[in-house]
Length: 265
Image (cartoon, rainbow, N blue to C red; front, top):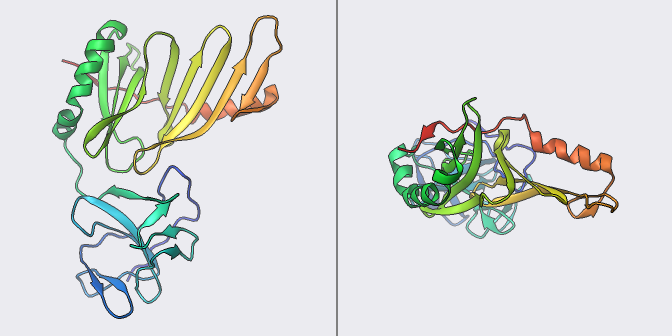
């Protein structure tokens, strides 16, 4: 059986496990639980994404050298699994979409209410060409709704991002359109946020984890009141101007912003 390699490192905001996919059944004997792939093989010394209850959501399990699922412990590669064997991060079970990719009509139906509300409250007044798209920002199989203004030069200003939680829209960001905000979705699924006014510039960098929860990566702050000394902070710690500038390099990751391709009718 082909063995599966687990990537050596993990961040708090993404699942980087590479696994084989099988359709089979869980089996329990006197030693423990193992997974029958249904083709005369079983996983061993590897991670597997398995949708055991066929709800379209898969959990990730580690099987030891004998093929038994490890429970309530730390795996050989230092990841945590709960008493059901599912991989967890900070006590939260990590999941991914196990079904086939859903159609645009599915996302149109699920996001319909927030699309209509945003267009009426913000889009018509603050966007010259209100546009949207369905894009899987973090690669977990579920697409986010991104709305904003499509420019004549094929660039886009992002005003709102929503994701789905139990098929219900959840707001990730929403530009109130009353001050100087700028949002970008960069390569790798990073969300860059900038807010500037007469006295300060605030930057933040975040990312969606595998469950579409927003995880903060870093913040950078520059205070410039007239007549006062300039103050630079990174993650709430005062730093030099040089350290602040170096931190801001993160906020232009590949400099690729999402382009919105669909206009509201």
